[in-house]
Image (tube, rainbow, N blue to C red; front, top):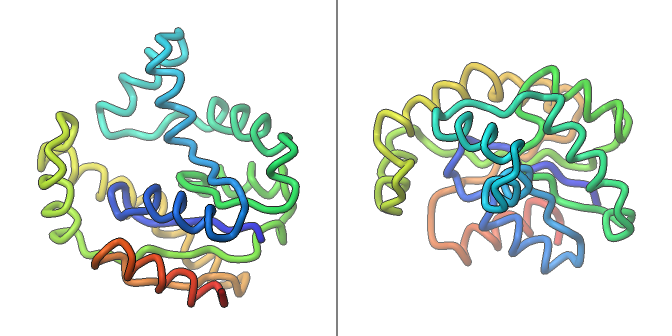
Length: 181
């Protein structure tokens, strides 16, 4: 099962991807985790990625695509995976299609969440990079660059929307139900 989790930053994709991947026995492939690994190890790429992410912007496609190509080639991804954080732009959809084929995804699962609810949730986390202005900028970037992908996946017949608000266990069960599990 090859699944894409799509939604604004902070909608719970990472938390849910880890839980659902565990339940389905497939890896959770997070571009954010790949980026954070480079940042935490202090590589040159990590310093570049850190400055981009702190500004609430997206990492350039060529960096993301190369990291993802390597990750999808690992043996555990052969039986399926949950993608979290990629693709986020039309250009990345083209790159992903090039890696796995136009029909390479089984499901694109949208985390439907309202901007004000997202701001409230993220401010509650208390992270240094979660100021209201930064959160709203991330949401704006999501609306401009990523939300248009929902129509593309709807047209491919693989888009499913799930309410992203609620207790973690409740949202997990909504996702599994939407995936027919």
